[in-house]
Length: 221
Image (cartoon, rainbow, N blue to C red; front, top):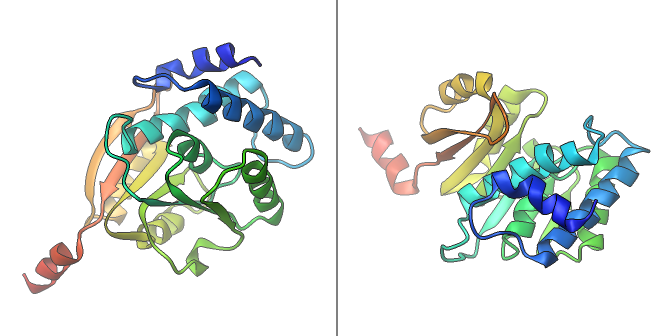
């Protein structure tokens, strides 16, 4: 698929500005690598390149634009992507915001190997893979992302634990999961849901974790 076709498919998910040719080339290289590996190991059930671009890259870049608007200051920020699978949304967010320090958490060894190969192929600095369970990851980050995963309720609680005080949790889920997320994590400050372009039921949901001061205040009330 040429770069112009990729850019056209991604346009509904993006606010200005458009992606650079360098970013589109990285997405193209990532796509070709994913298609080649997906023939050997099950990285995604979506097989057609056009649908991979819209469903996986499009959703991820929509999340990136919400978290890191292009016209805002670029803070030193760490991002943890829980249950990365084939790398979504973490790796496209890194392509959108190269200044991020990214950790992809993936317990499946074959998928983790694929993620490392994408990082190597795209020459991404400040990106690494933790091959293990998110429950065993001890560090926190200013932003944590979570896309549709198995054992959603358990994984959601784990992802929330990885968010640093005052940080943000981004969920890419179906509309039916929104109420359960708000119910499980009532102490977070929720924003959204934001409808996903070209989808009738997919949404982005952002929550801000209380700061340490806010948490202390809640405990003393």
